[in-house]
Image (cartoon, rainbow, N blue to C red; front, side, top):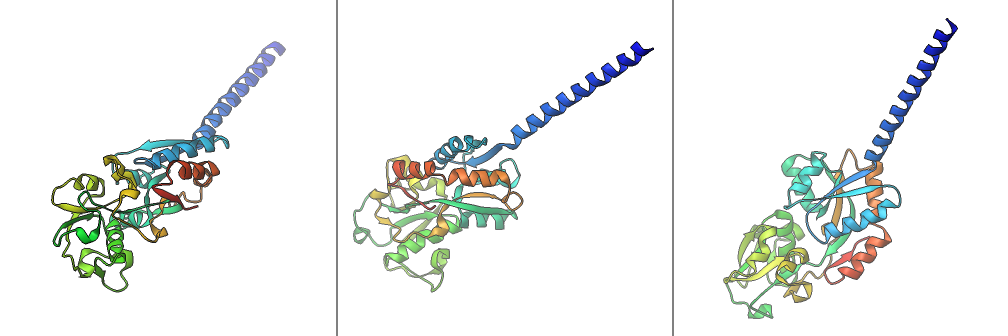
Length: 274
């Protein structure tokens, strides 16, 4: 009988150890998964910045995984639906527009850089040379449309209603001495509009205008004063903005390594904002 009891005791210990081992394995897997930070982004240099930050985050045991998308909606959709923890692809006004249209609760967490934006012309070296009635291509989304029009107003080429600032639309133009004919174009298609024969000026970001071999130093008009509302931001959700993952992401994205990368590799197109 003693042998039988001892057998049951031994079996009980073995089962207990096996259970502990199983729990430890499960916990380890869970801990590993919790260290993964999924970041949605669209194109360079944003995607490159995420990769640099990922190398930095490894030192603290975090695994930043880049999810690259092809348009200016998918990265927000992924964060809103919790397929991604955060995104790095937009400025705050663009995010706010998405929130208002989709009923989402995205939150701007940390500005990373300010892009040098402006207007480009394939035909003219001076605005004075541009004929009256020419077509000017501007972004079709409200946030970027307002920024483009504010630049033209800053150069005295149009006058906007008092107080609209960078929130203006074509309807807010009160004076248009050159009789510009404004062409509303999706942001991702503005580079193609540059080649249109009847378009003399095109607003664009360095990221997109680079596709046709241009950079801010080629611009006919550059934004005179940086408006930090348009800083490219790390974006998360209200429900995870204070999480350990987002804190770790913010730390990596504002690291010395990222700042050095921006200053050394992209100083002609942007200015770090942290």
